[in-house]
Length: 569
Length: 49
Image (cartoon, rainbow over all chains, first blue to last red; front, side):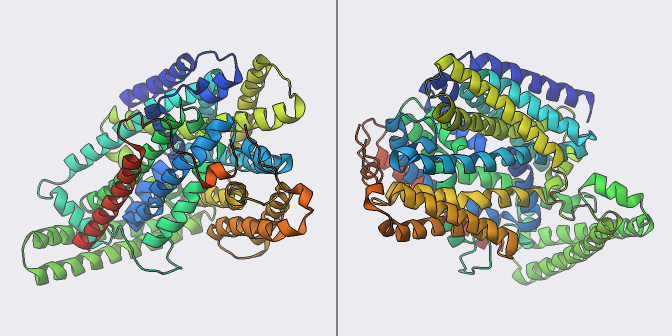
C-alpha cells in the first residue's frame, strides 16, 4: 500500500463522514430522523436497498466463492425478483398506509402487543449481534491486508459509521449509500479493466473464459432436483424467494429503507429496480472471481491466500516442509500455465478431439496444483490449529494488493470500507428505530416529545454502535465468519417470517395463537441448534413452518374473544 | 386500512410508476428480465462446459 493509496483511502473516509453529516441535516422530529421525512425519490431508495444488502463480507467473499466454486452461487438470487414483485404489491402499500415507522408496529395492529414485542426483540437480538459481525468480518480481512491490528480496523469502521448515522439518521444513511455504491461500482469496474489489461498478450478474454469454463467455473445453472446440492435452479427460485420475502419484508434494516420513499409508487419502484439489477450485479461480481481464477493461470498466486497464516506457518516447525511445498507449487504452476496456453490454442481451432485432449491435460495439471495446495493447507493448520483452512475471503484482496496500480488500490480499499459502512449504518439506523419506536415510545414514554424521541434515537444509535464494536472486538474465536453470520440469521429469520406470514395471510388467526406458536417455534429452533446435527439452513424452513402450522392448530383451541378484530381507518 | 384484506386483495395502485409506463408493464419487465438472465446463464453453462 503506497502513499497515493493512503491519500485516496483517507480522503474518501473523511469525505464520506463529512458528506453524511452535511446531507443528513438536523432532523427535529422522529419522522425526519427515522424515515428521512418520507421524501426520498426512488433512485436513492433503490441504491440504499442494494447497498444495505451488499455488505463488505459479501463483496469480498463472492469473488473468492467464484474462484473456488464457480458462478453457480448466482442461482441463490433468482427468487429475489419475484419476491420484490410480491412485496411491491402487498407489503409496501400496507406499511405506507398504516404510517408505521417499523415493521413490528404492524404486528400490534394486526395481532397484539406481545407478538409485536416478540418480533421486535428477536430482531434486536439477531441484528444487534449481526451488526458486530458485519463490522468484524471486513475489519479482520482489512487488518491482515493492511498489516493493522484488527482492533484498530474494527474501531475505525464503527466510529466513522456512528458519527454520520447519529448525526443525520436515515437521510444520512441513504445519501451516503448512493455515493458509497458509486465508489464500489467504480472500484469493481477498475479492477475488471486492470485484470483484462494484465492478461498475457497471447491470451484473449475469450481464451480466459474458456480456461475458466474448462475448470467448471462457468457452470451457472444446475437444473437437477438434488436436495443435497445447495445451489440449484429450483432451490434458488424457491428458497431464494422465501429468503428474500423474509429479509425485505420483515427485517427493519430493509423495511426502513423503502418506508423513506416519498410515496407508495416511489417505494415500489425502488424495490422493483432492486429486482431488475440484483441478479446481473451479483453475476458480475462472480465473473470477477472467475476472471481472477483464469488470470492466476498466467501469474504466480501464493499457495495460501491468508498472508498472516502463511507467514506463521513459514516461521513454525513446519517451515521446512512448507518451503519444499512452495517450491513444488511453483513447478506445478509453470506446468499448469503451459497447459492453459495449449488449451487456449486448441480451443481456438475446430478440432474437437484436440480440444478435449488439451482440456484433459489442463485439468490434470490443475489437480496436481490442488493436491500440492491441499498439503500446504494441512501444514498451515498443523502449525497453528486456530488458522482457518478456508482462505476464500482473501482471494480477491490478494489480487487487488498484488496487481492494482498505486491509487487504484486505495480506491478499492475505500470501496471495501464503503461496503462495510453501508450495511453497518443501515443496521444501526434500524436498531435505533426499533429501540425508539417499539421499546421507548411503546413502553417507557408513550407521550415523549418529538425532540426527546430524536434524542433517544441518536442515543440508541451510539449505544448499538458500541454494542456492535464491543461484540466485534470479542468475536475472534467464532471460527468461520460467513458461517457465523448465516447461523445467527437462521436462528431467528424463520420464526419472524412465520409470524409475518400468519399476520398477512391468516385471516382468522388470533394474536395469542401467533405468539404462542412463535415462542414454541423459536425454542424448537434453538434446541435444534444446541442438541441436533441439523444443518443451519434448515432452521429457516423449520422456524417458519412451525409458526404457521402451530398457529393454525392452536387458533381453534383458544377462546373466541381473543380473535382479532379487523381495524379500519 | 383493512389489515387482512389489503394484503390478500391489495387495492390497485393509485399512482403510475414514477419512471413511466404502467405497473403491469414494470412487473412484466422484472419477470422478463429474470427469464433473460436465466436463459443467458443456461447458454453460458452450455457454451463453456
